[in-house]
Figure 1 (cartoon, rainbow, N blue to C red):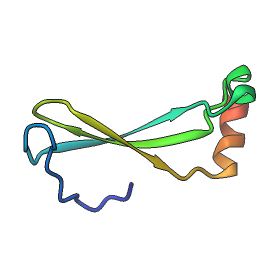
Figure 2: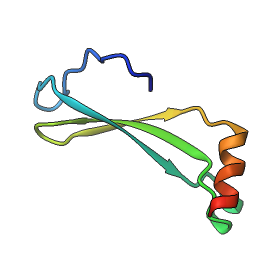
Figure 3: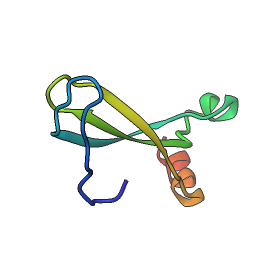
Figure 4: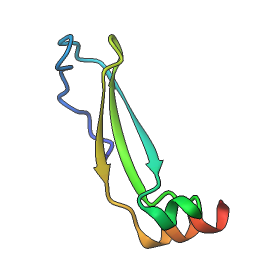
Length: 71
């Protein structure tokens, strides 16, 4: 996600404060075998009730190659 502020309202508690984070995960059989995180997700977490939504983010081939060599 970009660094622009979100017009966020939590769908569970209607709170308007949040935290943004990132998570990487394996995407398929070979990436699981070699422990390569090929999938990238951005998260938005409500600061009040901790409800979290994940959004798939684009990854580059270069970051996937770097991840392979640093595993």
